[in-house]
Image 1 (cartoon, rainbow, N blue to C red):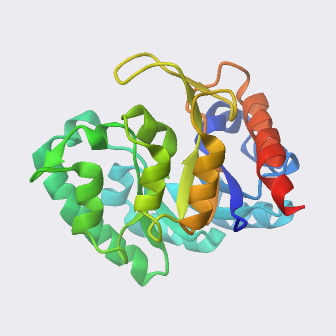
Image 2: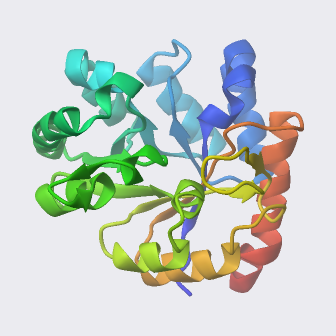
Length: 258
């Protein structure tokens, strides 16, 4: 198995970073996470963020950048990413009013434009899914697949959220394999209970229903670069939840490389 990096999507610790961003990053590094994916920077200047990451030995994987920022603040976003040495820019979410078929046709055009601009600066643009990308079709294709069929890989890569893939009724291992070579980032999370349209619980890795070990094996074979831990909602204190997930990764993944 190829060794992939282990990162954390900082959205999981959004409440903690709102109170103490730098202190929270220190705790994340101490747990053994190797990289972080941002979802906002807590008003920390890019130069200071770069210094902090260097001090802690954390890699800046990339950042989730909302559609409104991609549309209205693209150059500033590029400048920040370049300063902290991040390789990826990811659109993480679309508002409800921007998810119908006609809106998606427009996104196909704008995403390609974003991807071209990021590529000019040495940054890779990617899209992060939830479940709604599997509920709308464009010309007979579900949106998730249409995105990657119509936009060149040089302008759009996949950040697959494996929890939402399974929740949508799709075999997560098969979907990882389907996008091999175009899937540098995999959001690793665990869900417990709930069929499509029902209540689900997001839980620490190993406490849910996803076949995590086969998913990780498939990710390695698919040339995934980063396994990124994310827990949308935590029943336990979030800082404890991400520590628990990291301990699962040490016991079930990192131990294979010792």
